[in-house]
Length: 305
Image (cartoon, rainbow, N blue to C red; front, side):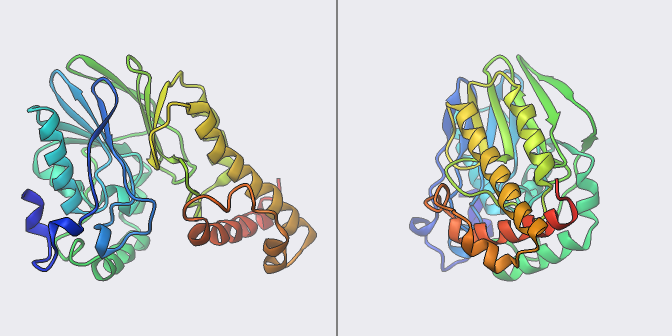
């Protein structure tokens, strides 16, 4: 297998996380990452990726979290079509979506991303994250793993046509990241939403601008999407309901932590007093929620509205 070039000799294929391409709509495919934190055991396979088969090539949406995963994605694509990957669209530059990008660059694919991603590429945050990943995610991330810039940076809505398929590349940030980009396939009513939508799990909010994230979700809701491929979690055929879950969670963080910040209630006290019952059953609640709440608390101290 092609991905073996990146693998540890001690690793056994049976231990690798399953990656099976599934069809969300005719010609629109995806692979679903695990609801987990990245680790050597899962190769950093914690996010989704998509691919769209056209009459003139394959368009990949996001490159996954390691070169090994990108190679495995190529193997899944080959099971579906003999067409070559000609384009890659990045929804954002977080590590679990881009560490496989060099595999597609090597194939000569044209890479699209929002221009705000350039700032991240040259920031200490990206460099330090990669250095840490080379230790924490070895052997899947190593000294050969590198960050890859887009072939074409865009700063506004862009429509591209590949063979018989029209795609809409829609900037929707700053929200989860400054460079958030969604991909819509109008003829199939399929929306690849990136990490603006986390389905069946608690989102990772980090330093995100949650106010703009809510606005961006409203933009996505304006699409006439029948199917949504989220950045994390299962594909949704109830687009409005599932996008609303992420939106409601962000709004609840802002409401509760905003009130605490206005009242100058210490964070620990506010967190303990908050009713999390609507979300505590979701995967990664324990790993993400307290950090999400704390970051929102800090945000609301400076942005009380």
